[in-house]
Image (cartoon, rainbow, N blue to C red; front, top):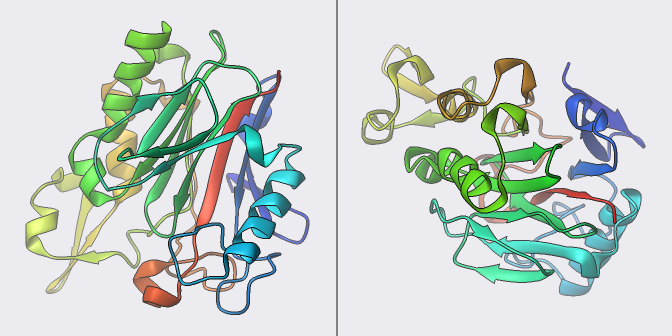
Length: 252
């Protein structure tokens, strides 16, 4: 499998990312946190969780990666295709992806069914964290991210290493015809009257179309909806769902 689970399955890593010198990457799960059930390791302030617990959860998760919380930049996500280049930590409103070429600056996204897409240019030491739900994916957010990395940071798409993290899988992610019609037929599976969407595959196709090499794309097999013990899922748990975080950056 593509994930390496560590520390009693509280941290998800990537085999391809682990091969890049100086890079730090990891993704939290719902395990190992201090929040009351069902939130557990929730890292989002935008759910009905105790803010002090959220802060402790973030510090626990980031601490396992050797990252200080004050060196992290995160977007306030709006299900768009907006990508921002950042040079300092903090919170960035109205965006669903951040790009950075600064050492010791880590960019992250929070998810609970949407695809966390991590892009790394090891040549120019550029990183991007992208939140790709169905709306952002339909709006080509991953292609926008690759274009921003190329235009603003000199990235060659063929140099990019990509990781598509745990998300709602085609096994469980049922959608309506109005959503399915916005995606390539090869990403839609019909089982009787039910329609299921493979959002990860849709993002993989966008990466390939953008010039990212297939051998440099690692794709998780974990479905947030079915992995009830390990992962948060808004589709499964609604308002009782926490959020996970994927974060990436180069050490200074």
